[in-house]
Length: 54
Ligand SMILES: [Zn+2]
Image 1 (cartoon, helix red, strand yellow):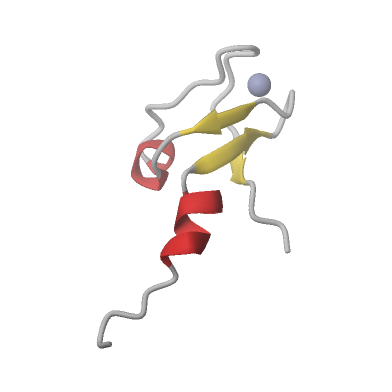
Image 2 (tube, protein in one colour):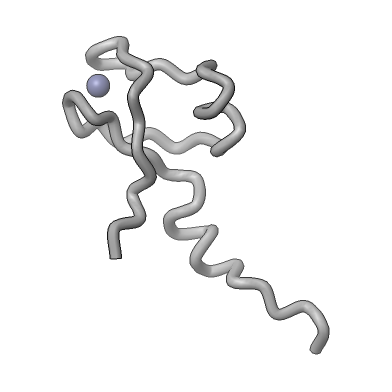
């Protein structure tokens, strides 16, 4: 088994981000967040953080 990648972690948390302003959960890709292409549908801000906390 050469491919032991934490896929489960990515599947659960890797693509989910939370708006810093209104805590709206958004499922998208990290690259899109970094590129500033994602906007919160509720408050319209660009500030997101990964949902992964612990
Ligand atoms: Zn928001």
